[in-house]
Image 1 (cartoon, one colour):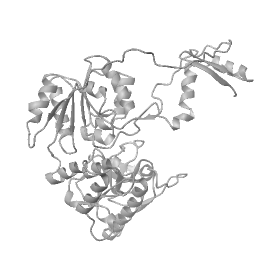
Image 2: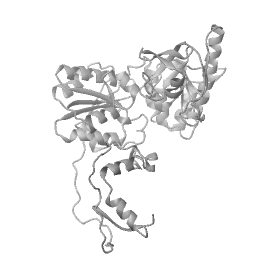
Image 3: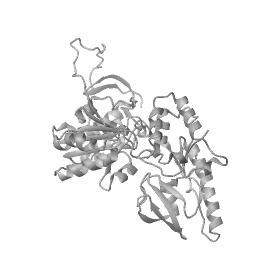
Image 4: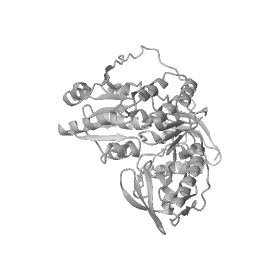
Length: 465
């Protein structure tokens, strides 16, 4: 339909419709809010934007009032009005740092601030410094004082590690912000991974003074938030870290954890921290020199492979699964091995997180790719046990046992010998680990830092050359 937009105001739009003006007039005049919400849901732009989060409307109220009038072309230009600049108070942070081997930091500093004074806070620290431990203690102490406490994180696997009563940020916002309410203490894990859209929605809770208190936990050196955009425009990765919003939520107080509890080797922890001060090329070179590969196929030197690209992930999973099937057949000549095929119409693409064909045997390691199948949680590891005619029994990393059909395995899981560095966040691996793709121009210092700090056994770490 040919038409020209003549001018836009905050309460209307002037249009020169062209020869089909009667059809346009009728369509706009009869448009209701219920019809508008359906149009938005089917709009082609949804392929490039986040899905709408509002409930579909059934309202019969008319959206537009259509009038025929003289052309409205005010012209002119937009300009800032002269006047004094708005002065905002300077953000000052009170920072308390944990000393080496200081086990009383929680009881001496954190607990009095949060529990006794009832104030929000930001608690930061590298991987392994005990952020999850402090979160658990704060939750227990707050509940002992009679407070309502809720824990949230961005990913399913992080929520599982926080406990059964933890929620993903998306689920919490859907239930408590968009379609409900919340009053109490909100403990936000991995706050550095939260994109701007979720933070903006959570800010609705803080609009009522004293209604919600925040305690945030994070490590600003980890990977930047995914899909961190506002009105389709990308935001700086550290926007939240330096924002006034964070200062308000944390009430200007930060507690920095510095003592490593995840590994007994303090030297390895110090190495991971020192990488952040090096140029990327120098950091990669040092890691390769300190953790070289042994002789033999590299894919057999680790039980977990951390990669950057899905292409590498698919290739390594294919090699590792073939080796696992070969070992299984050598040990169990009569054991059942099943061919897991791609579903009809599915094309294998190594650059996407899509399914791939493989042979399934006992001991196969899988990871949840979505939550479309009952009992399968996105991002959670599973191990295959008994294989039957139509299905197999699996156990996830939290001890839950259930059966999966071969079709469900294709639809909702992927092989898990190799995963991306992004998927490894909120995890730790107490097994031999191999790091790949360090030579890629897209492999950043943050990727290296995250991958290195997932390792619990530095003596079993290999950095691919």
